[in-house]
Image 1 (cartoon, rainbow, N blue to C red):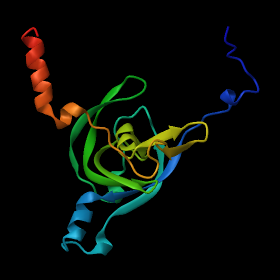
Image 2 (image 1 turned 120 degrees about the vertical axis):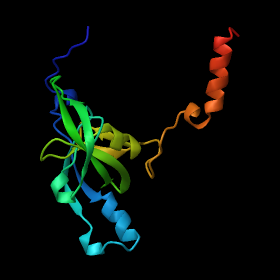
Image 3 (image 1 turned 45 degrees about the vertical axis):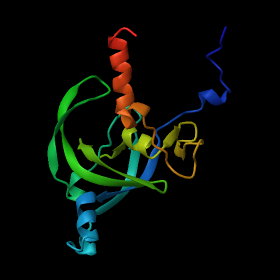
Image 4 (image 1 turned 180 degrees about the vertical axis):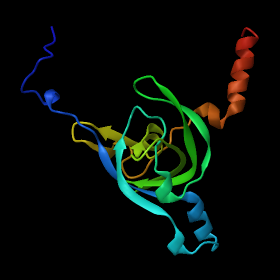
Length: 168
């Protein structure tokens, strides 16, 4: 029988929210600066603390500070099961832990949430016990993206599907 009531166990230590410092940059501004079409002083950057939300697929950002345009709407489902149509932004450069990625973000309010797509792209794992993000121990010095063989070689997938459908 497993004792789930271990009063002095490390497993009973509180595992609160994981918050990290991140830098958000308007990716459109960045592109214009790199092409000499925008004064670097006009680049909109916002540094803040983000709440890591492993239940969120996408990252949620703040529109006003970055001057982001809402490109469309998407249905979001909250933890309580309710759904709402929310804005999807232009691309944002997200930097944390010495790594960066670019993605469209969702807009829900004044809090920045760091979702799964950023964590996976940057190859970061959540250390709940120490309330921090850590690089994947399998490759701690750089992020590695996992790509399905079939994404790279669709002809292999097509051959397997044809064989399966032909009964071989």
